[in-house]
Length: 374
Image (tube, rainbow, N blue to C red; front, side, top):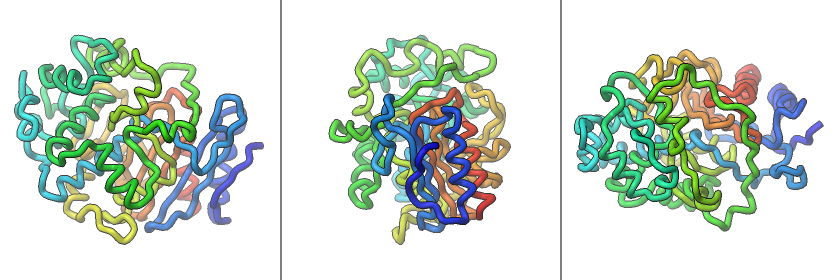
């Protein structure tokens, strides 16, 4: 039996039991699950090993790569610029980044791009995977590329490209990178253990990831899915893991703890507050979290409801029973969610990856147990 540490009041005993069950039969190596309600941490548990040999405990200081779960962080940082009036979801991306408007993309709005409607989920033609380590080359290639479908005509999940493009919009408007803004405005100010671009000083805290034994199910493969996930250049490669970790890829390589993620998602759950500080207005929250597109996604094999960077719970119920809940999931199982009706936010991180792109049964079981315990 794995030893489970942390905070777990008696009313959440079923959650702790579900957490322990996830370890049974080798379902987990190391993991953490945290829940915040009304700004208060009500559950924070962890257990297992952070390394491959079982010698290093997974504890409250362990960092894990959260992959696409970081898109929810990116979405909130983008929403802050909207709240300040310096960015508008309804204006074209090319208004802020003129070069982007080439080749049929001049009318793609920020809202369309952040809700995966821009038609640029990957490179066509395929690029060498080392291109991702050259930010300017990546941006130039995406600016020149034509959309793979008519922008605004349905969604097609952008696994990595969206982070580069939205990161460039953010930089041009704010003057800082997304990673710098996260560090300055939340890491330093609130001590939030969440990073986009993780320095070498934190390497000793990072859990060793165990990759999944099978590929994710993408359904019938076509040109769009090929570019997003399967081409040789669809993901960064050709450099070491340290280079990847230090890069700022807001859509793919954030590192953090479950508690930091749950606290950050509390901004959405609590009506725009982080603690006593207002981060987003009610008006901006409405713009950021409303449904912008719903239907069969062109990349992921599901009918999905996308807000401005958040995956909405409608029809999938991977973030509890409430359709108004929303969040994001990452490759291998991590996720972060917020339910504004219950003022509840939660996050799950782990270092044993599954083949699920969204809806990994491990966090789904934990989140469902939370709702049954409330």
